[in-house]
Image 1 (cartoon, rainbow, N blue to C red):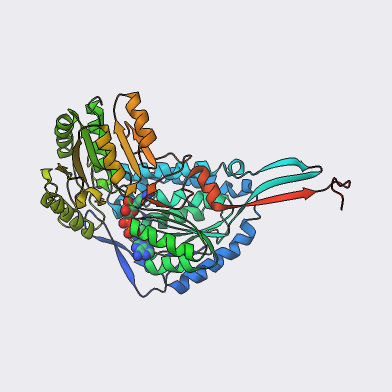
Image 2: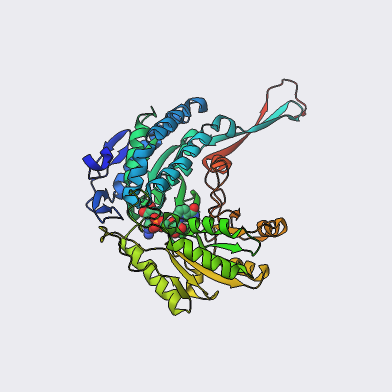
Length: 496
Ligand code: NAD
């Protein structure tokens, strides 16, 4: 067990290089989703505390922006090694507070580390460009400068990875960075900020503020915060985007999802089954890239329905820290009841429950939030369930006559985070890549999660903004462009 949860029940804030206990009067219990045990308490940090923390980050920005990029990335090299050295410890904390399996916890840390590695290339990525003699004796250049204090608000489903879509790029480009993690899973970042403390970053360059809506609102309204990154559900993403815009901030807000996969009869059915099963039920379906609806065409209807039901039924559900467990619980008891009631909605709307994960009983885990893999067959395209993000281990099956009808399903969806196709036809794959209305496309891929050097895209109600997280987009997002025109020759081309 990590030192964090063993020795500190109260989650602390990290402000101006020091760990401080919030003066909040309201605290939220952090619960282990597999056991229901309380493993920590998150303060709902007040607006006044947020305001004071932003001031320290603004002060730190003055020196940090003058620190050469080469020096700014040295702490990131150290951070990479520290994260590598603590992958097992951090993976356990992720499982304890989020519920996903230990292997899934460690896997998300790989992507976190990859983002640190990519941000170490900032001295190259942040370069501008120039042209001599835009007129006789006049040179023009574009340089990039950091914005100032920037903040990120992150969700409960990837406590270790998602903050790293932002943190390494923000500080490498010379900004000072504030993180507000999900109040449900604050412990992973508590430990990671202890590691950040060991990297030699000057005080105030990174700040950790724990809390809920009041802390978010204070960040959104603070005039010294220049940019906001948000990842979470669509209603909150829309709210954050609008409120950040009202105070003139740059904002990138990633929202919810309802991801479709089309299975053609020429697909390798064994591979498709394994990969789609992992996508739909991995992390108990609590992934913004989880496949939620499988659209089968022609003969794929029967073969895929049979094989996916068998694969889903064979998954071992339990406490993610136990050897051999393949799927953990949902994040909260409320999520469990919501998912179970949505299965009921599907049933009422005419879908057949081929595999029913409701009322799951896991030995010695009566207080865990478990829902087992569930498969609904024949979900109606115009039903409530067809458009609702379930965010649980539920796969809906629908059947389409042909590719046109299947693509119409995707077109109708309010979300556009990911769409996948399983086929052995290059022509079908090309059409899909060309036409599918989503920001992340998988061809024979179940979770089309972009590597750190590609943007994490998202369309429609899955993203509000224009510059995405990760890779080159991060550099665009975290810097302002400045164009400079210079004249240093004595002989003027222009007559005055
Ligand atoms: P959530 O929207 O409940 O919370 C996200 C963050 O917003 C948290 O830090 C929370 O404290 C804050 N928040 C919640 N309500 C707020 C309010 N009313 N005002 C201000 N701030 C508020 O999301 P969650 O349940 O933690 O995460 C799951 C959701 O995130 C799913 O919808 C999932 O699809 C989405 N998600 C999207 C992506 C993506 O890349 N598009 C990635 C991961 C998760």
